[in-house]
Image (tube, rainbow, N blue to C red):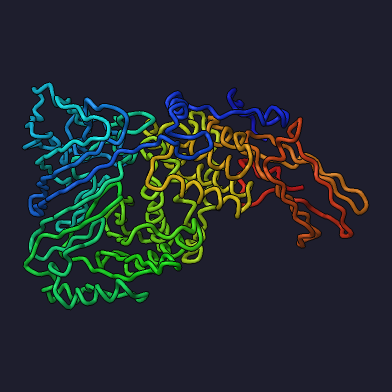
Length: 627
């Protein structure tokens, strides 16, 4: 047993069952106020007075590929469904991330050659009043990646604001932080349009500036987008390609129609087609529409192949999702990605979570990095087939979190990332020699107890790169799997899908997640939330403390030398043969007045050894797991 200092705030597992039942989860003041206002219920449901603002975007954009510039014009209708009068509008200008002197905690270091003056705002109107984004104007203030617009005509409850804006920015050429230049004639555009920030019932305006690490929190919106590109370029984007018949030649449109209704993969654009040319028409403006989505992204290229198929995602309605992959033929394994994507969409719809895929389109764009947007992902190539499977299935799983259930990635990245690591694990193992459950258990067992390890509940925008992936991906995936083990597969799925149905296209907090599981499981799981999500640090370590053998009977005492209540799995061997395996749920530790559990078995066979745990239960010190 390794010596260590036990953190004072660690949950005391030796408390009595009665004391554990009285435990409460700490709730922030703003959430408690939402309960009082009945915008959210303490049972995990949206409250009687729940409200959510909405937005409608009409955007025209032109991409100057040669000079790597984007020029845009947009009209925004912002609907204030809240009971509050809004005196200020907060607009996100994400490309101010590349401003000289901007505060960045990025996953990727920014190349100095990509530093600019940020987003250049031209014409801007709110209502009929023209405003200036010039720094000298007091009515418009820019800070970080946010622009605050003070309003003369306030936005009253249940009214709307009309905003018009022209803007442009330089597309980064040497830095890929979720978007930018993939190659000289391939670009992926995310975080590209001025966007109204979220105003919600818990915190009002979301005023966290984008720092390149934490991801996004967006309002549910409708989009009508026109994207003009040079001759010969294709555009893949969020939503429905409403004029695809006009922008690609007739033979390719016929193949697209075939693919949209078929289980077969159609190689719609091949290398041979690209070499022959004449894929697109002389119409260069691509039109896309999307409703009830939280963001819009697109990719363009003049030399990408395109594979398309479709998947029946709802057996009752026979609804299908069109699945496509746009890729560079030189990218390893990308010719297999359409099959990976198809199988992932089907598994998510039918198995875990078992909710029909919520959107009619899913495009994988072969870019760089790995990031999700509604109906389109940006995924880089990897020489490993296993990592190709993992990256693509993970990003597609994000369709459910944060796009179907609109979680706040900026504050609670662990909620969507943990779930999207967890959801596709079964289909991953079917497609590749990939076992994320085992890998994350090993990672958590190794890293748990870092001196400065924060609690999972810590707001994501406070994290640094070193802890970001461990906390949001590995530890949270293990927590979900331990919860599934505790509740059993069926009850866990009931709670998860119940949470998703309650909060689809809405903005849940972590407390809505916790409360929903408490309510639908019929259990007070606060002991679980406290130790896995609120506890700062801690080490998982169960140990076989003592084994007593008598004729026909073996008694094993298991000690919890760590800081987590974990399931107890004991395997009894006679030589190399497993005679019996006993599994006890983690809550059994709550029934003890000390930190040990004793298990006895009767056996006619000679028990020669006993092992504790398995590869899916974290344990920092496995040297004491066998007797």
